[in-house]
Length: 168
Image (cartoon, helix red, strand yellow):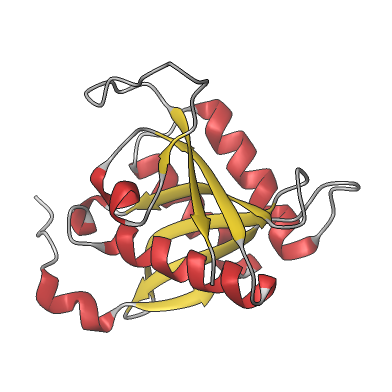
């Protein structure tokens, strides 16, 4: 049985950009997380677009990797949204089983938001993510994006569109 990493190891986490030589390790991370074949197909092509930029007309995502001692323990992506100049989208996030529930996903969320802010510069911006309602996103200001009068059952495991608005 694989030993769980502890919070004392969080200081070892470094964030790096995806490079072509790490694509297979990242795909294995998604496989280890139980992602389905359709998602694996999509993430493979989005990683390729990130590294090579070779999908014409496609807004290239940016992948960050959480790395400890040269081992990829997490991966997550974000991109500018085609919907608006001040809108960004978060996608594809996974953490190695031994590192789950240790705060890695929260660290990757913060890193992605920092990179979005750096690209966007000053001024208001919105960030979307399609996921389930959970405390990590709520603590960061994400709320369900629902039609007026509709409510989301917070115990539901259905994915939902969340949005956060940041002024500065």
